[in-house]
Length: 407
Image 1 (cartoon, one colour):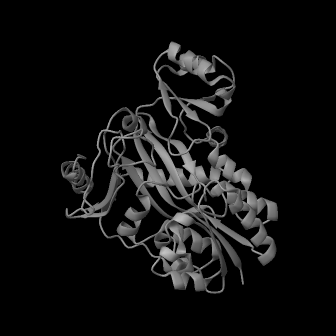
Image 2 (image 1 turned 45 degrees about the vertical axis):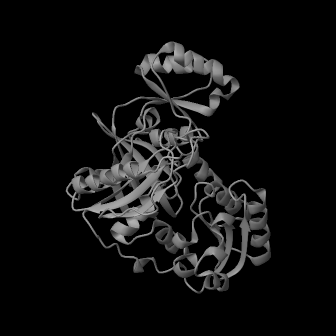
Image 3 (image 1 turned 90 degrees about the horizontal axis):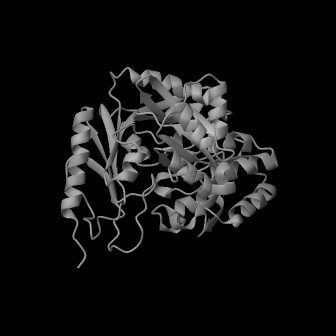
């Protein structure tokens, strides 16, 4: 029997470990209180499946989560820790190192979290990446720009949600960044700006290969989102697109080039440039946006479930992808502060599912433009990329027309 500790920030409707993991495993749950067990229709079944459950209001930041985990590992003899949220990856890795448990350790988690460490490893493995440079002293950004040309980008080394990315088009603005950051300059790295189409690959990697993967292209880059109130779409590549195999191959090479654990979910971003496809960033976790519901609708595959089953040897072979449509995708419209009011609770348009809105009712507050902040999102399937795109855009226009402005 294995004793499995689960660190969970997801809604339990989409994190059904009590049903996914084999009965021979004894389960323990540290849960985000906003996803409380007692709010779930299967609350009784969940409570009967877990030996112990603790829930935390300030789950993402509370030191009590880690302290409870330590206590349970000692008290119950827990031998496996499962965590998939970006807030839990490093926390779980540190616990594994502390108690000598199998799985991703802190060195691996840091390699995926620190963009400079990651890029150095990928560069050393001979993988194609965007030109970059660490920022260690004043003038480094200007010197880098003189080598690669303007514009250049600056990114926080350990940022999340695409926050903090900035573009510099000339020397004076770059010098101003040096002065603004002062001793915090080392927390950033610079990258050459390369015109591109943004691609990403999501899946589960087990013992050196991707046991499941899907490849998408985005209609915008993050800079487009920041600069204007445009929606962004991610739609899977067509089955006949030659880039699919190339991206999956490059994803596997990326994961082999990093200190990747035996089993991991992954989300890897690529730039399709005039000179070929290059690796941007990799994450050893589930991707955000509406990747998960799109894959569940399109393939009947849940990446959390597939990774958890492989990590605990809980019959992963029973999960067989079933193509429901040639393409699938999602649209997200971000909060630029220009749309406020009351939105419809449901979307009646054909082909649309997983419609959600977080529309603020009033104009108060500051717009939050980040990859994790959105006004509306939805999933669509289609016979081809064009039909999927048309359905998502129709949903977006319907949403804007349906918002009732505040009085």
